[in-house]
Image (cartoon, rainbow, N blue to C red):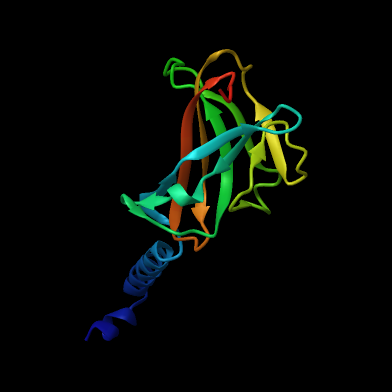
Length: 166
């Protein structure tokens, strides 16, 4: 009986696009990371032989819903340093490091033990400074998705700039 109604052009013009949108929407839920959760972890801060700050996501600290989780690598979308003490009407971002061509290469793979350093000479990464560094409390965050493309990743750490190893 319903199929008989689909033969009418007006009904077909309404039902078929709605069904198509519904199918595309549902299938999209299974291909993107879960929006309600994120793998979280800590970042180790160090300096390289040039004196630049370096940031290493500590895979051993990775948790999802307070449960330890194993990941092989991170598909990094961006490393960001920001300051929470900036007024709401101003950008909190101090610096970003992201893939050089985000359209073609949306992510940069960070493997266990790999560090991302300021003033990087990596040809696949671009550093942008939005405001000068000054002595202040800042947060570094490395965000992206996990190796299985199932969960968002948010490794972060608060520290005082300039950073000292003492």
